[in-house]
Image (cartoon, rainbow over all chains, first blue to last red; front, side, top):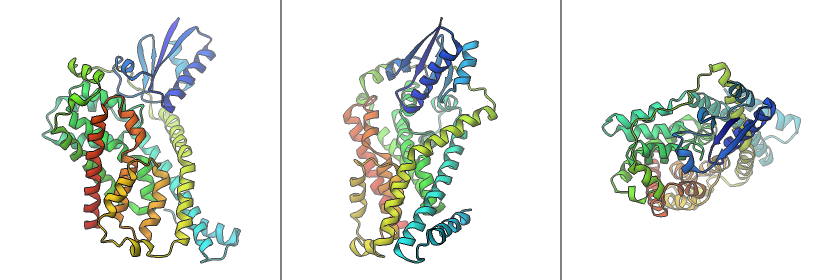
Length: 78
Length: 325
């Protein structure tokens, strides 16, 4: 099971990214645990300078921009 | 570039809607249609171009550069420029702030970044460009960047680190070396474009209502406030207009999109341009939502010092503009 984390302090772009992740997971039919990290202290542990960030299995996949549903679907296939 | 917009709005108001030419109502409507179209186009273009720049901006490299090189004081200017380019929102400004202090970049340099980030933003630039022309826009942008540079430098002279939030201080203690960052964006330009234009539209849509409100109020005032109204009541020699405008502007949080059209009418009716720029800077550069955001990384005392210093700097620049312009 894949573990997906979306990092972002609750801005509009972060919410869009989170929804895109949920949508992509649904479309892929994969089982995945999606977690939203909004706490800035928690976020800084992952060593990022710009959010939103999409992490899959503890690896940073996209950062500083809204990842599209299609893009996340591709990332999930890896 | 915008002649056709002018012709279109003339045609729309005077021929399609058949409003009498040179009437107050006609002027106000013409002004409203022309400005709205022009500003929407400019705003989209600028947000779009900045989106492309930001998509390719290697922020990690720039941060590491600031962290490892001795730039002989130029680091303040560099950080301030960086703040001007990057958008100001909680999704990037706070993580960048932490990243900076974490990397051992002096707090003063970090504050240079933080001062300029909201001050010089694409919405303010587009509105200024549309309503005041490129000279005033250039003055606004350059002075905003210089204000960040010197403001950060001055704040850096004081020992402010103890006034950071407790958890940020803990990060400072465990200073890290040059960090490697994952998640490099390898997409080609063609794949980046849809996302960038979508976000640009999102921003334009988000401020559209404010633009309409701002230009609407501006247009109404433009047609009905008598010429030289403010000159008669304030006089360009009234030095106190600058601090009064700035102090009044700090607590109000108006979207740049709503405030610039109103300011433009003030200026056309005799408010000195310097006072107007200072007002604008205080409105967008300092605000209560920004204070709330900074509360995550700073104590209230530091926010107070930060806001106080920037306020004084904005007032001083207002005086300088009024002397020069």
